[in-house]
Image 1 (cartoon, rainbow, N blue to C red):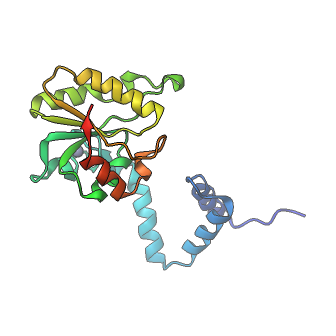
Image 2 (image 1 turned 30 degrees about the vertical axis):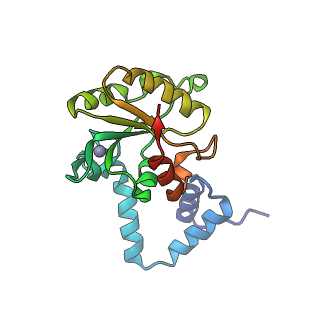
Image 3 (image 1 turned 135 degrees about the vertical axis):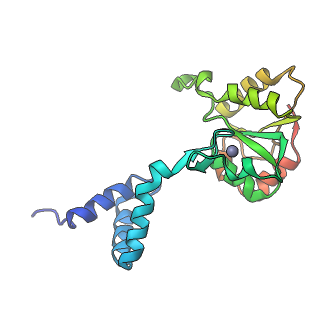
Length: 202
Ligand SMILES: [Zn+2]
C-alpha cells in the first residue's frame, strides 16, 4: 500500500520544520497542520516575515549582535550603556540570556565561535582584531570573558586573555557556578546574574 502523504505544499512545510532543532516528524506535522487552521492573513504575515529574514536581519558592525538593515544594534546605539565595559561572548544567542538577567549595563562583543582545534575552528575565525580596536578606540576599562565553562570555551578564554594582556585593561571572567561543560545560552538568568556580579579577575 502506498504511503499516505499530505499535499506537496504541506509536505514541504513539514520538511522545513523538522529540520529545526528539537522538532521530530510528528511535531512538524502537528505544527504544519496547526498553521493550516490559521486565518489567511496571519499565514501571509508569517510567510512574509520568513521570506524577508535573510536580508532583513544583519549583524551589528560594532559588536556582531543581531541588528536590522546593516545598522548598529540597539545595545550599541543606546546612550545608557557603558562603553568602557565589554562582555565577550561566543555567539549572539548568549547576549539575550545575559540581557534577561538585567545585571549588565556595558556593551558586548561577539567572537563568532570558540577555539576548537580538533574541528579546525582556529583563532583566525574569531573576531579578535575588531575587539582589540574597540578596546583602544573606546578606552575600555574592563573586558569580561563570558565564555562557556567547557574545554573549548576555556581554551578561548586563555587565548583572548593572552591577547588582552598588557593593554591596560582589567580582564575578568564569570564566577564559577555555571554547570561545567554547559552552554551559557541555556543558563537561567538568575545563574547568569550571579556569575556576572561575582566575576573574578582572570
Ligand atoms: Zn552592537
